[in-house]
Length: 387
Image 1: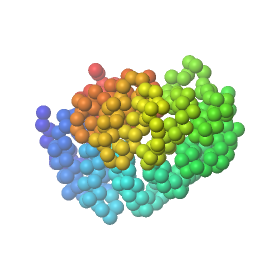
Image 2: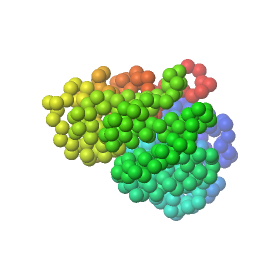
Image 3: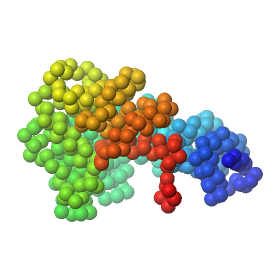
Image 4: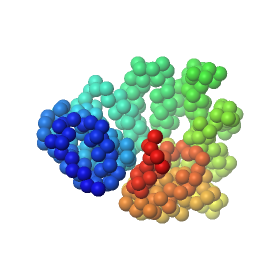
């Protein structure tokens, strides 16, 4: 079905009927007609007059997880208004989509331009949050700290204890940076402040308790790691903390192999996004059992992915994407992601089967890849829809 949409038949009003028509075009993958509609908007009025209609299409594309197309049309808007005279929301989405597509250096450049041009915007704190995460993953820790602290101050203003919840990710920056004393001070302060008996703030306590476990693990302080090694959640609630369960289970598995210090170090570096260190690690594979070898292949495969050697990464990850690998969620996700990025959706579906079969994972990006694949195959459903 081909739907032709022009400004004349919607009279510049992005109403429900237009939303439905756009939704159908996106589901039919008829992006040519979507682009025609957006091009007419760009040539019809000043940016402040058309941004709502334009941004609604971007929202709809994002909703359907068509991130590449959403980025393409955001870029076209920015090319039309390179002086940043348009709407802040659309400029922010460029960095957002680049981040989701794992194009980190481009995302950093985009967000830095955004915060320079839209200082004081309601979107600046979230842009700073993303910059903090990106600089952490690219090992620029001073910049990561600065941007994350900016976000923490914003959270402090809008919600009680908001800065303490935001500080959870700052701890990862300090772990990777080696500022362990500072991290320990923050963890102790968080544990003192929150009480697990108070249901309103129980999640805060659990989050800080988990960071305490990670702190001792990264320090390889095995005595204290074992002392605190439990998730302080009633058994019947643990299903709601699947990501934390997954991370704790991985640490406990690595703990079993603590006598092989180079293997433990490789996992710690992997956990802290220090992929260069993973590849530099000298590990005698003859001393590893099958589970360890599969995990090491996973860690190396992921490191190669982030260094752009995706064919080599694929070899490692597909080999590791088998039962018995305690990093199976990561192997499955990245093996599928590489195929997805090449447009091999059937193969990506095969590689993602193991991820789909797991009860829980601490790799939330896998859930989004599931939805992106569902969109490609026309299976993506929203609340209230049949089927």
